[in-house]
Length: 472
Image (cartoon, rainbow, N blue to C red; front, side):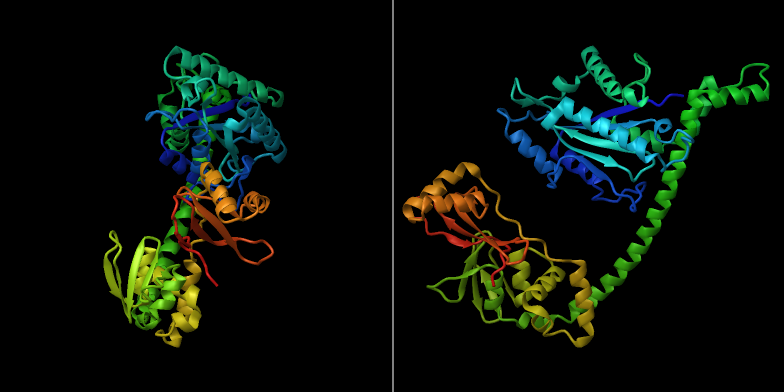
């Protein structure tokens, strides 16, 4: 039986669909039938941002916004039947010839590039499942209309849609023909299968196909030996046999995943008990001076009211160990450093303890904790690291106004401003603030904060640090 091409497409109509597919493909969520010891390969797309952000950026350049029911991105699944990857024994799931796999992957990547160019924003080669396959993401941009249109690129329902899908299968088969991979039966009555339906089919009970397939039934007066010979050479029997092997392979992976999950749950319960013990012994963390905590939280002391601290939508009055937020949407009071961190950072008690430890060190964060709990605190901090600082989103349309403010009103040389802008050290956000990026002094500098200066209007005096900024 000659190896056949496999091509499936899936419509992703919401950014939630895009994010969910991305989580599966990038293995950001548990995938029971995937082998964690094998690494997948990025074939197209050097941008490591979330796929949702890349698709949003691609669509934002179009003339028209997508309709509410538009397909925002098309997921394409590419592979070949097992006979190509393991010609000696196609039933050996999880094994293949590396040279054959690489030839197929290169041919598939080149086909995607030639047919879709920059519209194909990402293609991921999966090598951690039973048979190599590619997940490609294509933003169906229609240059003529300035919209996204899946139907214009891949066809919709009806006869025209079937014609386009048939031509798509022809095109992919033509690219793989030099490798000896053929197209499936053209004009077959079989319906088009979506990506998720393909996965469901692989995981379904294949023996039911043996019972319902009349072609595999013995004919009247047929001898046992001739029957065995006939069905072993039948392509339907071979396909079911390969599917059985894939199913067994995936069942083994699933069992291992369940074992890991059970062990992980036991470890989680152990750590939860440690956390509960630690939380009972952190009362004295509330004794940290609230002024020091407020400064580390990125709040600024009001010069006219020394007990009042402002920033990030908060107007907090500190009175000894107590505080109260007078901001219209934040009116709330509390007592102690932990409560203040939970209020400003919108986090729970455990996250507040980790944050205080990260900012004040063991001496400050464990002022109330006895020596016995220090090792436990280190475990929690290792398990829950602080979220990396996120710079404000750049708004390019506001840069000209910010640049004019810096050069004309503040008198900074224009060539100096442009140099900093090109290096990404100053830019504009959506509120027309000048964003000055703060970086550390390591060999590979990373953004650790940002100082904001308002430029909108005649008497704009706003200035402050972006939420999460580290100040030394």
